[in-house]
Image (cartoon, rainbow, N blue to C red):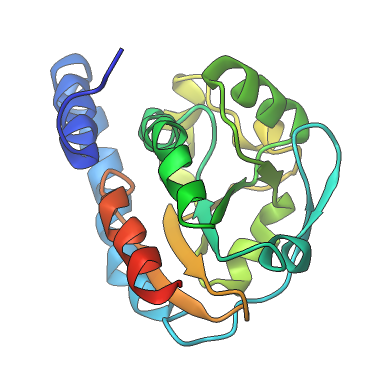
Length: 220
């Protein structure tokens, strides 16, 4: 079924539905966590446009090692950092990119999605949502840290996650509550960052058209 509206429209609909279903005091905990993360200035410290992106070698959902240098040898690369298959915002965004993947390939580019969840979790996600691009596991958000995206979920927010069956240490296979800010990067074939955007508020994501426009302008 064809989706209607922009990506942000779809994400805003998730937020609206959540506000109708979840008690105000529980919502306030999440709003506090978002505000506090934003106040750290983390958005200003992400790997910027023009920087050389760190090389990586991570395992995909099938257990295959995927190297950034091999991907960049084939063309520019869109890198999507996501929180996990438990996050409806991330799934909605990745499904949008699934539907746009042919346009991305027409521009000679590739895409990978990177999150801290285990390979088994990624395998479930790829199969359930029909993702045509590699989904890579970033243990303990080590690569996300190099991109300036990693943070630790505050203790007061962990009980909320557990109450909705999001046990991050189990899902991610680590005794850790580390997550990445959802982020979109475009890397040129030389590994330089052409586009970079991340938000402390996980409910906000860049429109795919911005990324596709970057590829149209910068890649020939």
